[in-house]
Length: 246
Image (tube, rainbow, N blue to C red; front, side, top):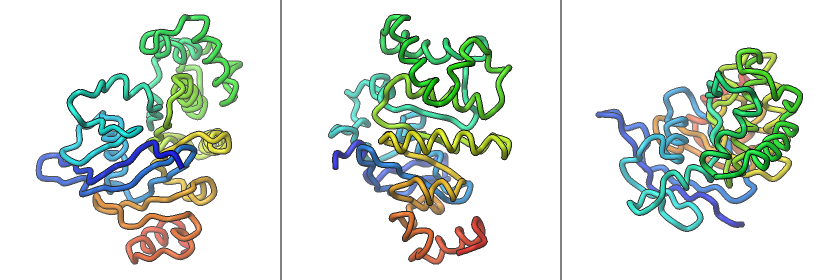
């Protein structure tokens, strides 16, 4: 397997609060890795460190064979290779759907408007939002906004898609439409790193599940093993409280 990301001994503190303690894991090309754990376990901070929205205090992030924490790395160029989907969509409210999906391509990647629009349309079709290109974000439901946000990230044609609890701000009936799109992306072979509370999705779609607890990786493995036969008592406790089933 081709390794896309390799996280080694990653650490991050906010003041005296050590949020990430010696984190080690990797993501291979085409793999879907879900990160689960209770609120405050460090999941979102880990994602924000990987795309350098937060600066790690130590360790390495090896991307395509290079440590991107070294001083000579072009952070902006690196970020263009990672698609990021946030909890709160982060769309530009003054731009319509199509322009939301072209602005990054034009400004950051230097694509022509024509090429950017063609690529944007391709991915808006994938997420089922191609009929809404002239709508502004305020005219869309939460689920539709998140699907546009996914299309926008895909239009940059990144190597890895990072999802930070992409359904947590959605009404229950809209969660399904976003998870359906993510499942289709997984089936297309996209490399995905997903922080999620949706255990059904993690169980069904991921190749590997990482369980975080109090800033460490307490357990990781295939979904079958994590959900049906967890080794750690803390994993069992977490799944019992989330699934009421294990």
